[in-house]
Every structure is written in C-alpha cells, then in structure tokens.
Image (tube, one colour):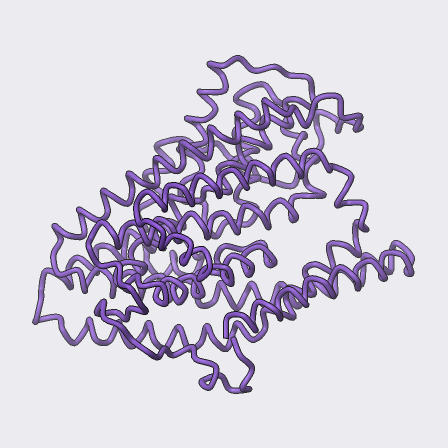
Amino acid sequence: MSRNFSLFILLAMILGVGAGWWINTNMAAAAAEETAGNLKIVTDVFLRLIKMIIAPLVFSTLVAGIAHMGSAERVGRIGVRTLAWFIAASIVSLTLGAIMVTLFQPGAGLNLPLPPEDADVGVKAAALNLKDFITHVVPTSIADAMAKNEILQIVVFSVFIGVAIASLNEKAKLITHVMEQVVEVMLKVTGYVMLVAPFAVFAAIAAAVAQHGLDILWTYGKFVGTFYLSLGLLWVLLVVAGLVMIGPRMFGLVAEIREPVLLAFSTSSSEAAFPRTIEALRRFGVPKRISGFVLPLGYSFNLDGSMMYCTFATLFIAQIYGITLSTGQIITMLGLLMVTSKGIAGVPRASLVVIAATLPTFGIPGAGLLLIFAIDQFLDMGRSATNVVGNAVASAVAAKWEGELKDGPADEDGVTAPTYPLAPEATPSGVPL
C-alpha cells in the first residue's frame, strides 16, 4: 500500500519536472506563465481539500486522544514532557541553522542585484510580540478558529474538551465513542482526498519548473545545497535522539514514515502529511491517543524545519547585504524566532511572515525577502518534510515515555490491530493509497 503510493508520488514528481521543462522551453514566456497558473489550480484544489479536513481531524484526534488518557494528571504529564522535547528540538534547529549559514556563508559574494529599499515583498510583516501571541492562543470562537484553520486555537479548545471528557469518566463514555467515530470518518475522507495527491504533486512541480525553468535549481545552488545539508544534519540528530530514546526500532520508524515525509516534501505542506503520519505511527506501534495528542501540538510548537529555515534565511539575507551581526545579536535573534515561530501552522508563507517581522529588528532591509522568493517553494519542500520527521520522532518518544510503544500496529486502545480504515480495498476506485 505505502510502497505503491510512494511510487505514484515519485513518478508524479519526475513527470512534473519533465512537463515543466517542456513548457518552459517550448512556450513563450506569457503562455508558460498562463499554463503554470492553470496547473496550480490542481494543487490549490488539493491543498483546499486538505485544509477542509485538517480542523475537524485535529479536533477529533486530539479530543479522543486526551479522553482515552483517563485523567487530567496524565494529560499534564505527557504535555509537559512533550513541550520540553519540543523546546529542546527548537533550540537545536535554530542553533544548527545559525552555525551552518555562518560557517558556509552562502550569501557572501553572491552577485545579485539588490532590491530597492521600498520594494513591496508581498508579505505582511506585522509586529509579532508576546502580548499578541498569548492573546491569539485563546480562541474567541471555536467556529471562527476552525473556519480560519487556526491550529493553535483549535488545540487549546480541544485540550479543554478532552480534559473535561476524561474527568467525567463513564458519564461521557458516549461522547468519547462519538469522537472515535468522527476520527474514523475523517480518516476515511482523508483516504478519498489522498487519491488526488499524485495529480497535485505533478501540477505543483510542473508549474514551478514551467515558470522558472531548470535554472532555478541552480541559480541559488550554494544556498539551496547548504540549506539541505543543514536539514540532513538535523535529520541525523533527530534519528540519533530517537535511537537514544527508543533504541534500534528508530530505523523501523524511519521506514514507516517515508510516505508522509515524501508527501510533505512533494506538496510543500506539512498539513498534507498529517493523516498519513498518524497512520504510519499506528503501524509502528504508537497508539492513536498518543499521536492524536502529540502531533497537533507539534504542528504549533515543533516545526523544526521551518525554524531552521527562519534562522538560515535571515542570516543569508544579512550576508547578501553585507551586514555583519554580532554573536549577541544572533543569540537574540534565535530567542526572538523561538517565540515568533510558534503557532504559525496553517498560515500561508508562515516562515516568510516570521522572517519579515524579524529582519527590521536587526536593521536588515525587509525587501531582502525578494531574493529568496523564487526558490522558496523548493526550500519549503525540505522544511515541510523535516517537520514531519521531527513530530513523528516526538510522538514515538512520548509513547515510549508512557510505556505504550507497541511492538506492532496499535489501535486507539493501544493493542495490536491487523486492519485499518485506509486499507486499499476500502478505497472507492481500488487504487492503493
């Protein structure tokens, strides 16, 4: 099942590069731009479908997961441990990005025309301060939060509901059962949505190459190469941390999550991989009550790839302008990014918004964002895949801490389960997912 779907995704990527190259080389610039825009319709529809299911899926999985934990004390214990892991991973990601971009200096001596000081970068760089962040966490309306896909607000509301259900025990048994059924329904809907994924991947890759040509892969070769090298080192650190915590089984986890990682990479969306990550973790042995709690939190607090990118891109732009930051300024920047990068899941170009808000603080022209716009999609692929890896490792570690990491597939009760709603025979067209 997973292997066939991964092959479909890889084939779509290869065909997308070929189709995009043909459009770029055989059509006039205006026609290629128009064709790329039409191709993006497929990708936009797919991402809209993902956004359509992400709010109810996060809500139901989180509420069901907390309800199964049985007590507020247990929820608090897992939450504190998980957040501690997230903070440690964030510090490592931000610091590694700063070290790598400072070591390799990808922006030094890069002969690119600098944008004017008053250039419109197309990103609203609203000030992100502690007051706004804290007040934004609490939703004024859960309906509004779901309508806007405000993941962090949905998480807060879900935690309250889940803890309330857990505290009522048998009195809320029916509601717990209903939430479990909602999870199953949403996973079934997810299976239908995923049938569109290969087509969306093809369209996304073809549109990018059609617009910018294959040269876009080389224009900023040093920047892209160094960033992906940094991501590779981060992956190694995550795997090593996983080995320390869960032992040799970490390699099995890496094998299980290859599909959601590939999906996140090819669509440049961590959200697209959320349902598949839950299924991969279940096959690995992480009960849904654990993954349903940790993953939604991870989407707000554990975006390792995105945080590394914020540091890397900010210092890269500084290098382009010949601006040298002191060690103290870099440390301050890391602390600022640590706060402003939380709760950005679901925001379009969220990393760019954070960078745009950070640049003026250190005297770096905000127009420098124009220098990385052209390749942002290709960089987003890597950071989205890294986000999935980081959250998968965190979920497995949380299950290990609770003594609930199983040797085989686990269902919502933490026992082995041979079947799952997303089995190939359950799909309407018979196409393996």
